[in-house]
Length: 194
Image (cartoon, rainbow, N blue to C red; front, side):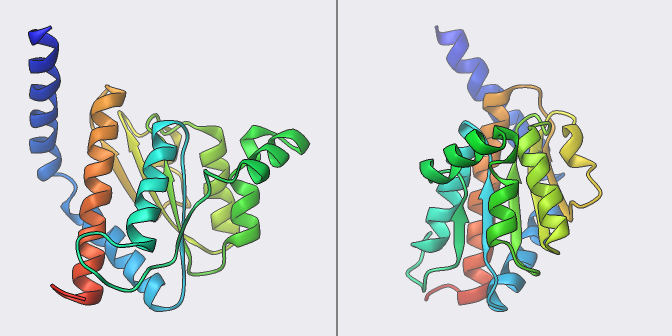
C-alpha cells in the first residue's frame, strides 16, 4: 500500500516539474483570451465527460462565484449539469451531440469554449469544438497523453496537453491548470483585491 501512495505522489511531482517548463505560454494565452472575452461581454462554455465534466463544473463555479478574492461574478456555464437538456439531446439525436447542440444554442462570436478530454478523443467534445468554430468562438482545450484528435484540431486556439499516459495524473494537472487560469484571470481583471 505504501508503494501505491509513494508512486502516485512521485509521478505527480515529476509531472508538475515537466509541466512547469512546458505550459507557461499556453496558460498565459488561455487566460488572456478568457479575459478579453469576459471584458467584452462574452462568456465561457465548458464541457467534458466523467472527471472532466466535474472539472468543467468546478471551473465554472470558481468564475461565477469567486476564486481567491471577492470580485464580481464572471460569465461561465458548465454544459454538463442540466439533465433535461442532456437527456433530451441524447434521446432525440445522440449522446455525441449533447455539447454541440448547447454550443449552437448558447455560443456567440467571441465567447470561449473550454473543451476538456483526458484522451483528446471524446466524440461529443470534438463535436463541440466543431460547433464552436461555426459560431466563431475561441476554443481552448485540455487533454493528455499525445493529445488525441483534439490537440491538433484546426479550430483549437490553445491546446493544453498534459504529457502523461495516466488518466488520474492528467486530471490532477488539469485542475491545477484551471486553478492557475482562475488566478491569472483574477489578477489581470481585478488586481490583488477586488
